[in-house]
Length: 133
Image (cartoon, rainbow, N blue to C red; front, top):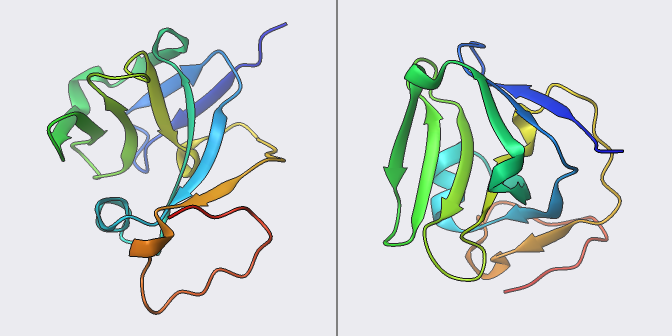
């Protein structure tokens, strides 16, 4: 049986569905994720690209290439960060979902903090999740 999760942007103009459970749950502390989310870190889970389906609002999706191989997608109406993906390399067939946009309840047992060498100086990580530089 496949897990199915729904999500949307802040204004609900964009709605999506993923048909597999997100994997590689991470809280990214890099400056690009911090700026994209306006927060201390951004929380993402990844699914195979084939498992992400836009249900509504494709015309409201816009994208920004934050580096040569990374494309960030968000709602042009409200600015909600929704997805990011790599255009080449090992994970080019996966897309990362901003976990805060999920509308379906989701439990995550295994998580990690990444890019902690770039974390905001005012934020202190106080949980037990593994960290990588």
